[in-house]
Image (cartoon, rainbow, N blue to C red; front, top):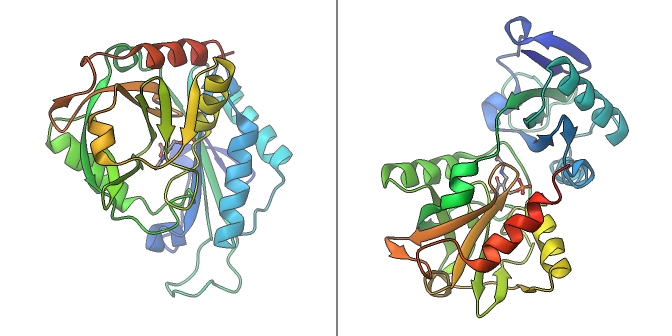
Length: 276
Ligand code: PDD
């Protein structure tokens, strides 16, 4: 498997990362996961825009333009002969002796690789279960940083309960899931948390907002409570890997009929039509 490291294409075995990389010490960096359908980057523009926005907020200077990065990722897809899957890329602030302030001379380090996988057809069809849990993350969840410990702990909590994922809430207000956004349907209206500092501004979330408009489905970017979540007609999560995945049971309670609902199905169909 070939990795992109800075500007070079290298075999995984030949890749050497410094033990002083600040990503390793501090989680001091950012990442993106971009879906690849038919060998092509899906919604690359919005992913690059989010990457740039996160880098600016973290004050990590990007050593390339979006066009240069896009060209390198396309080359990475080619050399790995990837058809279906995704590209993972991360940028850290660089390597320097461990000390909290930004190092004066560190150069940002880019690393990217591809993963091959098929669309998650079983969970798209049948849905998943979830458990609610406290959102103990920081107040900049809109930044896609490498600091994912609360997300990792939460996801494992779901696994330990035999659930597919968690749904986070802050004092009873639903935010998102461990690695996806959450939407509910009540009386034919979709609700999802506003894109502020408390959630990641998911690219799939954006695609679904666009599709809902196109399909004439009413959608409100408005906060909702755990109570509304549990009493929703339909619930689904959205992400690069999960696409539009139904949630059929939460905290042991069936959502709606306990089966994926009609608006979820309609959006899944509309989403499929956007796949090149
Ligand atoms: N996760 N919320 C969180 C906390 C996420 O980590 C993600 C993405 C999303 C959905 O964003 P998008 O639609 O742009 O994928 C929402 C990626 C896939 C991950 O960490 O693997």
